Image (cartoon, rainbow, N blue to C red; front, side, top):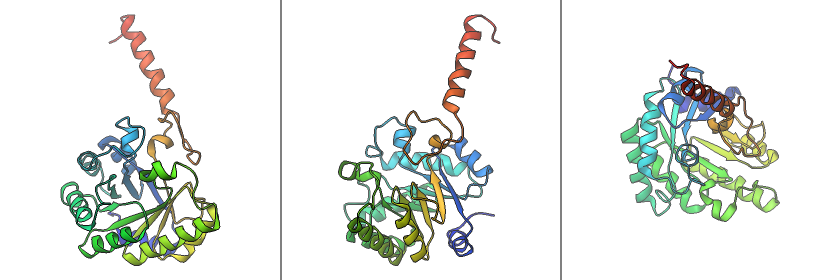
Length: 257
């Protein structure tokens, strides 16, 4: 069964948690899909994970499309969502429609994700959904705003909580089918999840959200640095280093092949 947006919204009503991870290539996507992951996000975190940048800001639309095509080729079941990268949708609605439309037309992704809940972004979400492009929203810590917000937890003051809460409601009303809550306080995430009829996907936002997402390289222990909310389930970095060292030793001592 192919996972649809309607499935995600149905699962919220059934209180069935949604499992989400990121992917950046065919091999990882195929593994995640085989494991039964519901939602695969081709996040612009690939700029750091796969391309070696220090933030998500340098990632281009062409790079997102390239990687999303590879991910979609490895997926049979999961819903694939592609991030709109920095400055490919913020200028105006026309730019957002063009960028999002290009992703949907060229990659076979099921939806796009964008960051922010300020008034102009609410209008953008409205227009994208009006032309038939499904949108996943994202509030709280928004990495594309790192130069302003940093990587600090959001929603720690009453003013911040009020702002994020109303942004989430406005994004739902604009037509977003789900919303990522990143690195916000658990009580705020719980309040938003109870209020919204669309699924909330948490990352560093407590366990009350309708689903959870992690960057797969963090989960697998491939990252050299982990965010405070990540939980590694393996240490593939050490496994790979050990395996390569064994191979190199065998080659140098003429034990291979």
